[in-house]
Image (cartoon, rainbow, N blue to C red):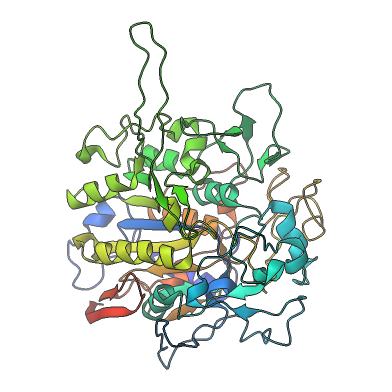
Length: 536
């Protein structure tokens, strides 16, 4: 009897609405007619046609902040032009929900930020403050709890009401164009509430519990509660950390990829030190590495390229590269050596150009291009994303690649969707929305989720075209996709990967599209869009 491909099994389950909590082991895909021996990827252990996963992990955007009126853009003079395809599906946004002026329950009505207003104040996105903005699910306290407008940053006269601002396709033009040609989700959430570090940890482990002070016996700082990370402590295993640090116990996806012999790496801008680590010698003490590279940010001020608390693998002793050592050779990129799978962004392109692209890649922009409000912007971010995707689509690996664009947190920006409460928590750092009972996903407190809704896009020859997925996913869904694609199993210890929704509805593995969408990095507009045929 021929086995059904595992992704088709999951797709059937999605269709009947039971994806959350499904535990399924991967099974081999049967050959299709005419496929012959063209299954090298499966011999390398993949369970779908995807042999290369690239996760572009950006900063601090809610879904409505970027897609509040998708697919309608105002296209004002002097802005980029976006025109939607006539068959564009509806998404759950402020238009379809009927929550634009004058119908929004918040004290300030949502308003459009122009392309000239791409640089804004950073909003409050702390673990408890974001819960308070939800107001026990009424979604009406964003201005009072997370809104920030302050001297020294751009609030355009809106004060805390700035938190209700959103962009359209005349500013976030590239992401809207990618959504037109590939797949996006309108039901993807932050795994837990809170800022960057919880989001980054959930991406690679589905787990924010297990934090320990860098020096055992010393008290925790304010960024943890009951052993769970709720703030932005920096990683203990990193020479370039500059404030409170924590170490994480347990395992992450890097550990299990190593166990299976799958090449992988986390590549972050600015990881290469400006002053290299110097070991102790001749009676002199060792000197730590210094990460001093910077660029001028969207706010006109210098911003460090490397941000330690955005590098999740540096929290784990097993996957850290504390001294920011380079790979021993380009050919060793993705393999275990002195770099231990942690690299500078430039190391990725050196490996790719030499034909050594890892199977699993996480990309983190330099600070000024990561999309974070204040020091970065939607336009600075767009240049990084477009240049990266233009270059990846020119590679021979593109035909078996999936690029996932995801975000670490919402920055507090308004989103109207109340997230499903899959894991309550009751600590002094939890508000009413989260305090509805004991944690359902194991005993650990301080992991309330799901948090705010975030953008999620899949760019791939196997991504459905102009498609919107409505099934519930979260950051650990990316982890789960990697686990399933390489047959890694679950991480255990009450990781959110055990209940994560599937990304599979965004794919069609029965047909590979020969598609390349090249955009202008500045405008985000389409330069060329080529699609021909496809593999049935």
